[in-house]
Amino acid sequence: MTYQSRDIIFFNGSEHVLSAEPLGTYAAMPTFMGIGTNNHRGYTAVWAVVADKLFLVSLDGHAKGAAEPGIRSVYPTAEAPVLAEWFSGELMLQSGRLLHRSDIDPIYEYETALVISQGRVCRAKKLPLRPAPAIPYSVRELEGVVPVSTLKSLEAASIRTIGDLIALSAPEVQAKAQMSPDTLRELLTGMATAGLEFWPRGR
Image (cartoon, rainbow, N blue to C red; front, side, top):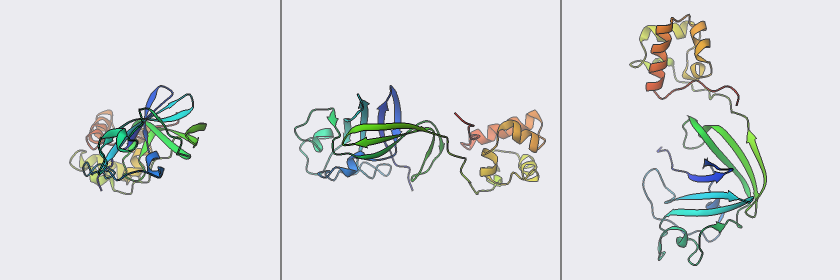
């Protein structure tokens, strides 16, 4: 499945990825024309929280049958920004590094939950970092970017899956697998080539 583009939201002066779709609960939401395989909704929205209120700032997309693209596809007579009075619920704001790519539940380095009632922010809470996902694929999947001898040393140290590997730190892997500095560097280079990083600790 192709990774889907997500809305952007500005909160407390920072840009975040928005995991929810506030326009999805708008009763008069029209159907948008498809943009591509990475955007089945047909639009991407930009939001902002200003003075504890949620606003729709811009909309990239064209609704079927609409005279104009963008926000006027949804609100023909409105001027941006539009107060999202129709929305009540929880929004998950995500920022920092994308630690685990998933079309359903991607994990970012930082997450903040906003509780919204009729477009107004009732509560904001920074969430603790989620634990490293239990990725079941064998470290042997790294063959070609990491020497086989290094992968064997990982397995001998009971570091058998990608999940086992990223849950540790570089010093922990070096100690458990009794790696030389050069071998560790080869491992880190191979992990970077494969798009893997060690899971951050704390905040």
